[in-house]
Length: 230
Image (cartoon, rainbow, N blue to C red; front, side):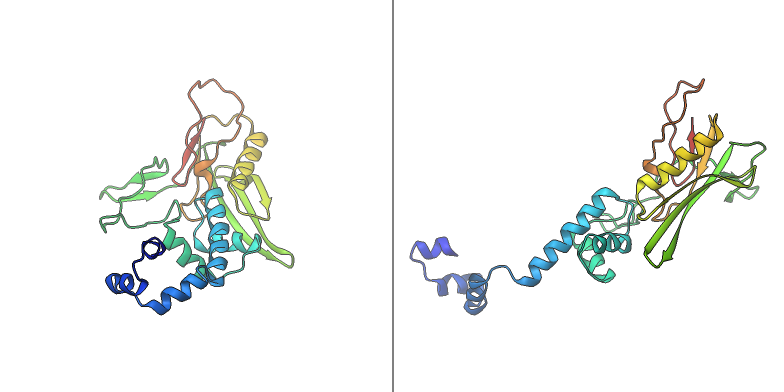
C-alpha cells in the first residue's frame, strides 16, 4: 500500500480495488502491532520452547511449562496457539493434510499375545528377574508445586527396582529412572521395558548408559510399546 502511494496512486483507489476499508487500514498504520498480539507472541514463544524440549507434551503440559517460564495463560489458550501453529504431541492422533486419520504408530510391542480367536491382548508375566519391567509416571501436588515420580517395577520380583523424582516432567526423568534401575540390577541384557503411550511416555527418547554385555548389537528401543534393553 505504501509503495503504491509513493507512486501517486491514491490510497482510496487501492483500498477499493482490494476491497478494504480505509479506516481500519489507517488504524493499523498508526498501530500495526496491538498489545494483545505482543502478549500472544510471547506466549507462543514459551509454548514453542516447551514443545521443542519435549515434543511428547500435550497442550496442558505445555501450558504448565509456559506458566513456569512466566507466561500465564489458560489451557484453552495454549490449545488454540498450539493448534494454530501445528505443535502436536508426538503421541497425538492428528489428522493428515488430506483430512484422513493416520494409521497406528509403528512399534515393536513385546508384551502382546494373540488369542485363539485372533484377538490381541497384553500379557505381563515373567519367569525370572530382569525379563520384564513396567514403568509409569505419577504426578503429586505439594504445597510448593507439582512433583513427578517415575518408577520402574520388575514384574517377576513385584518390586520397584529404580526410580527418579523431579519437579518437571521431562525426558531426563524417565532416563534417570531407567539408569537407576540398570545400576541397581546389573546385567539386564534382553530385558523388556513397557510403558504406556500417553503424554507421559517419555521412554521413546531414552538412551540410558547400560553396562557392556555379550550382545554386540546396539541399544534396543525403549518406548511406550515395550522395548529391549540390550
